[in-house]
Length: 232
Image (cartoon, rainbow, N blue to C red; front, side):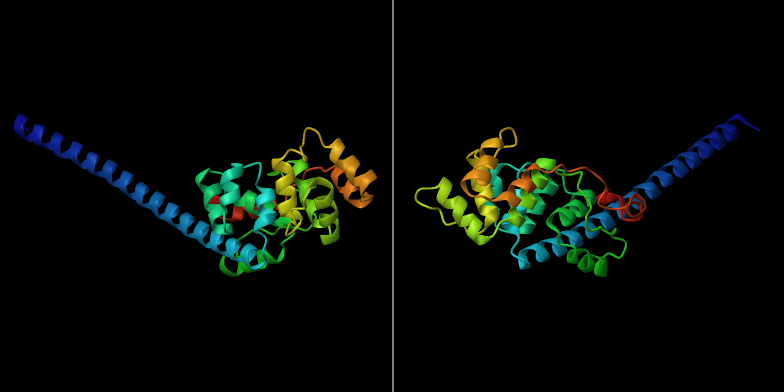
């Protein structure tokens, strides 16, 4: 074979190999982009369902207590709806499937998962009694404490710690305020618990704040794997 023909043949072969290589990269990119777009769509659907549920059940002040360890206090205070809160968590890289499942478990909003499954059938089952790994035991105790308190209990605590009374709208706004003032503090809970026990005789509330909380998954690992990896 003449040298020129051999040279041209080698060029054609290398060009063909380069074409195959670039084609494989393009196919991989398109698949990756398609998968990413699907994940983003599912996440947006999930955020809409979750935000609508908690807003319709007037749970924003409760969520502010729940996520106070994850967000700046001023940013959290200025948040006016659940979607805004979720978007902040997403921007911080904290919003994922585990957090949503644990939020449902800790807030005991188990009806929410039925609404999610209508749009996203592969969403994992969140079992009642599940204990979160996304939130500290202290945070979980405060959530139980907030659910335990009656309106009268809130008024009693308001009168004890505020002169004049601040007239909290619910237990969650009171907990947020007392945390901000460090009357409720994970490092030093004894004085607050003593005031509940001896000044107000709120024995059951004391028990909630002093109970031990273990950890177990709020959703099965096999179910989680069945959902989109964006949320793992």
